[in-house]
Structures are given as structure tokens and as C-alpha cells.
Image 1 (cartoon, helix red, strand yellow):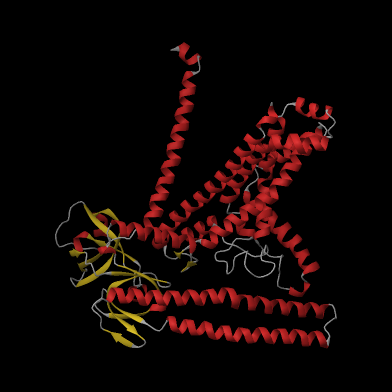
Image 2: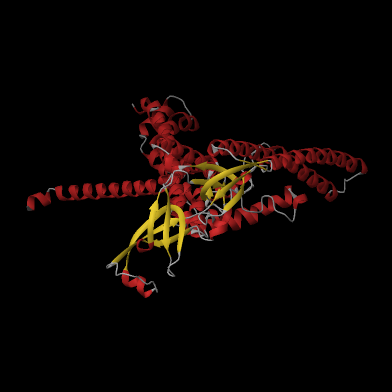
Length: 550
């Protein structure tokens, strides 16, 4: 036994076991997040319960089973619940998602198994997905087309065709609002700023006033035409309605312009549910959020995360590589260089929120405020670059991840034999040519390793971004069709902050919980995709410059 311990085998097995347990834990966590998040898009079965309340009155409840648990009977009795017969030590209760928010008041409610008289699963119960007020559960009775009630045998097919029409018209209206109407508003704002700039420079002549007024009048005339088209599309989308019989037994009229889809989950087969799951996932990835981020999609957050990380990578890579090359190839070995290396290493241990405070004070207020005074005085006091934006977020995270790139690049440079440099110099190459053609290509895999680590850390950071650019809901993306097309001063959405906002700031915790898991899994997927892309580039560079090592 003593020889076995001295051989070091126990420590090898201990290390291997610890690594295996860590991998199993990480994979288990990812599987749990994926299951909790992706199962949200699976169409759940809808039940109708007949229940007794505490006063002995019978009522109907329609909804889907969201969760269940065993509750001690003593706790229920202490809370004031009375039982006709002793149910035992525990009572099972169900958390039911009822929807119909404007009529019921609560999206979720607990019901006890002892209060259930009967439970059924009718095929003609529909789940109405709406753009506001959440889902609606009930029985479609009839369709109202242009004020006339249509008594049809096949209500389902007629309802679907009318919903598709309303959704198509709404999409056209939103596209018109974001593209053409948005462009006119952007152009009008540019004219206002241009006029203000002339005033500040004392160059606002009568000729320029007339020119600006003509341009403004032309844009406003175009705006009125587009506004008329927009309201006409909205009016057409809201032309029809559907009559739904809800759990109260009352007929409720819902406008089709607020309905996105209708699903008869109880009559769907396996393949239909799989198709519905993929459609739900696609909408989650491609749509904008709604209902205080508790419904809809996360496309702006995905776009903002990827855009900010790529911008950060473009900024941090050249600065990190240049700093590493200077420290390793040019700087003399001495106390100053040693202190710089210690400072770089210590920067990696600074809390990220401190970088956020630094970015807010230096980049946003000092640097951005100076840019506004020098180049955008006509917009003041409203800031252009003097407020949090995507460029300041990228710069802040670039400084945060700079030590990682520097250290990784220096490690790569130190692995290159001195004989390679000496051979290149002996053949007549200058030091700069040696670095550019020999040393940097050989160190490029290490540079990519530093970039991979930087991307992995930056994509998951939230605390500094809350101070320098990220917001709960951004009205526009940093990229659009208005010149100069890339607007680095704009605020943006981020998947990490979206998770925080939905999970901790949402007024409806139960409704938001699945979206927290789904967004978390999506964030992990985005980080893995970015890392796999960088790893692929690194492996390509490693194979390309492998011949230089021999």
C-alpha cells in the first residue's frame, strides 16, 4: 500500500475522478436547463376541472397543469382549509395555468386534489396566443367578419384563415413602421440637428432656411401618406373578431389583431406537437419580446450579445497582441517590465463591476461627453456618445479581457525557439519582418486561445454592462438601413441581462421561469457557437503554420 501511494497512482485516480465528477455535474446542469427551457415550447394538454370551493359551491376551471406537489395536511389546516373527510398525512395539489388574465385576474392558481369533482380533456378547447394579456383558454364558438357573425360548421379552419390574414396585415404594418416611417423620422431628426448646427455657427441664412423647410415639407408629406397606409393596415387587421366561451360559461369577443395563433393541443398527435415545438423555438429566436419580456422572443438580445462580443474581439485582439509583443520582444528585462507584468496579471482579478464603474466614468462621461461637445454640439443637451452605448460596452469588456489576451499571447511567443528568430535575422530579415512573417504566424494559435477565453468571459458578463450600455428593452438595433447603418452609440439588449430581468424583475414569476431556463440555454449555446468558431480558426492556423516549427 505504501509503495502504491508513493507511486502517485492514488493522486492520478483522485484527479481523474474529480474531473469526471465535474464534467458530469456540468453536463447534468446543462441538461436540466435544456429540459426546463425547451419543454416550455411543447404544447401541453388542456384540462377542464369541476371543483368545489370552501363554501361548497361548484365551479369550472380550464387550464394546463404547470406543477404539482405534496403538501402536509397540517399546514393546510393551519392555513384555514377545512376537509369533509381526513385526506391523510399529505394532500396533492396542482399549480394550474389558467390564462384569461383580464377576466380571471391570476395566470396561475393552486387547486387541491380533494376539491376536484371531475377532470376531462375536451378536444375542442383552444389555446389562443395573444400579443398582450397572455394566453386565453376556451371554446371557439363563432367568427365575426366585418361586423357579421358567421355561423360555420368548421369554426377551426375559418378561424385560422382569419388569424393568418390579421397576422399578415399586422406584420406589414410593423414592417412599414420600422422601415419607411422610421427612416422618415430619422431624416427629420437629422434635419433638425442640421438646422441647430447652422444656428450655433451663425450660418442659418434665409436660403438655408428655405432649403431645410422644403426638405422637411417633402418628408412630412411622405410621412402623412405612410401614416395613412399604416392606420389602414391596422384597421384592416382589427376588422374581424372571434367569440370564445370561457371557463365562466360566458361568450367573450376577442379582436383578431391581438391574436397570434390558436392551438388545439388535445387533438394534436406526436408529429403535430413536434412541428409546433419547432415553430415555437423559431419564434422564440426570431421575434421581439413583449409583455415586459415575459413573452415573445429574444432576437434583439441575441443580436446585441453577438454584435457586442464581436466588436469587443475586434478591439481587444490588436491591443492585446501589440502589448504582448512589446513586453516579450522589445521591452528590456528589468523592474519596470516586471511591474507591468504584475499589473497585467492583477488586472485579471479586479471585479467586473469595477470595470463597469470605470467605463461609465471614463468612456461614457469623460470621453463620450467630450466627443459630444466637439462633434455633436447641435444635439446637446441630449447626449449622443455621452450616454451608455454598445461601443462603450465593447471597450469596457475589452479592457476587462485584455489581460487574458496578453498573457496567452506571451505564452505563445515564449514557446517559439530563439533559433527561429536568429535564423530569420541571419538570412537578412529585419526584426519587424521576422515578427510579422515568422513569429506572429507561429504564435497565432495562442492568440486565438486568448481570444477564445476573452469571448467566453465577455459573453457572460452582465454587471459592467448594466452601467455602460445594456437596457431592458431597446427600441432599435445598433444596425439598420439609416446612414451610417452602424450606430455604435445606441443602447442594446443582452442575453445575460435579459435572464436577470426576467428572473428577478418580472411581476409574474411563474410565467417567467421557463423563459429564464430557455434564455440561459440559448446564452450557453451562443457562447459555445462563438467558441467553436474561434477553435476552428485556431486549428486551421495551427495546421497552416505547422511547417514553420520544423
